[in-house]
Image (tube, rainbow, N blue to C red; front, side, top):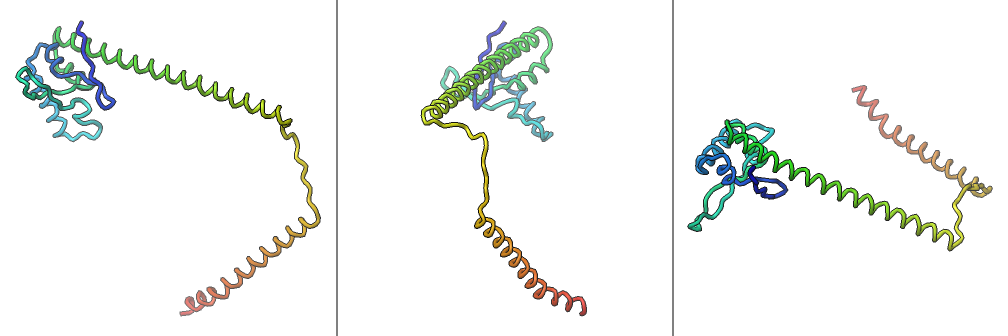
Length: 194
C-alpha cells in the first residue's frame, strides 16, 4: 500500500499531484493536462455549489535544476475526481491509498476534538466546584443565610405618592389628547370639506 503525504494548508488537507501521478503510473505532465481539463469544464459550467478550488489548488515546486515547475494540490474531492476517471489496478490502489489516508486524518481530528471537548468539560466542572465552594466558604464566614421570604409593607406616605403620580400621569395624557385633537382634527375636517 502507498503511504501518501498529506499537506495541510489553510485548514484543508491535500495531496501533491506528483505523488498522485507516481501512484497511478501516469506522467506528471499528463496528469496536469487532465486536471486543467477538469478545471476548464468546471469553470465553463459555472456551477454554484462548488468550484475548481474545492478540488484542486494550483501550486509549484523546484525541480532538480532549481526551476519552478507547476503542480496541483488535490483535496479529497480532487482525489475522488481523478480516481473516478481511472480503471484497473492502479485506480483501485490509488483510491484505497487516498481513502485510507484521508479517513485516518479525519479520525485523528475527531479524536483530537473529542479530547479537547473532554478537557474543556472537565475544566468547566472544576471551575463550578471552585466557585460553588468559594461561595459556601464566604456564606459561612460572614454568617450569610439565603433569603427564604421577603416582607413588603407600604406606609401611608408611599400610598399618597403613588396616587399623586397616577393622577399626574392621567392629567398629562388628557392634556396631550386635547392638544392633538384640537390641533389636528380641524385640519382633517377642513381637508374633508374641500
